[in-house]
Length: 257
Image 1 (tube, rainbow, N blue to C red):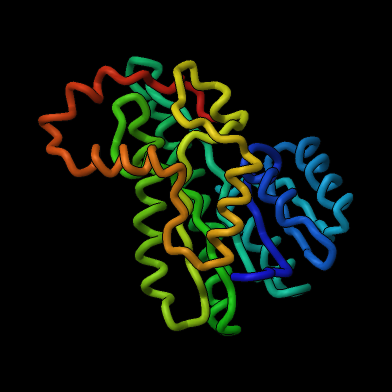
Image 2: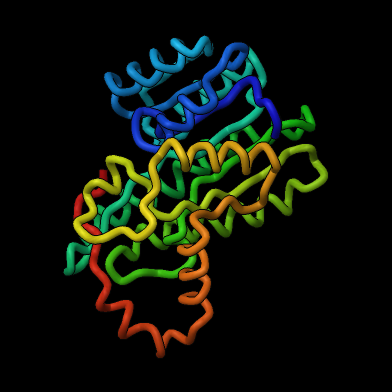
């Protein structure tokens, strides 16, 4: 969608969500920002207001479906939400061992249920208006399961596949759907990775790529291209051929946050 006027962003208190908020902030734009850290969220809100955007911010957990839906629909009543970016997510891995059960459940609760809790209340309203756009934050990690982060990869694969199906389901309704699949982006989340991250991209550049892709209603916004080519190859090769290699790759640390 070109020139959305009311934009909802979850996970807006830091990382890519915060950068997306700053990228979209402009005169005549209303931002509805959701995050977990009150102080950081207020800092982002003030930065966006300094660019003459109107900002409403709320400290909410995306796993709280009722509270999230209530706040979003209140904002939609004030001014219809044009673009909803379901960005909130957490990342962690095995630490070279086995993922703790509670960590696995928390990752799926935030990365999958949190996305559903964000988009499902808004879809009927967008359909009724025959206007709106949904953006789902997946990942390159959703193309192939990595032994060092099976829950994270699985959660992002679920978001990717759901978004692709949702786009087809809503085709012709006036509601656009895009799936975002970044590679490594420099954020507090990736700062915890203790291993080399090829083609690591700054968050401001990633946010501009996402904004431009959404403006063109791209089905999949995947970047950078060398990482996309690599994951396509890993996805295409027989598991028996690449599993030994995959087991040698470094693991994400334990601690989903």
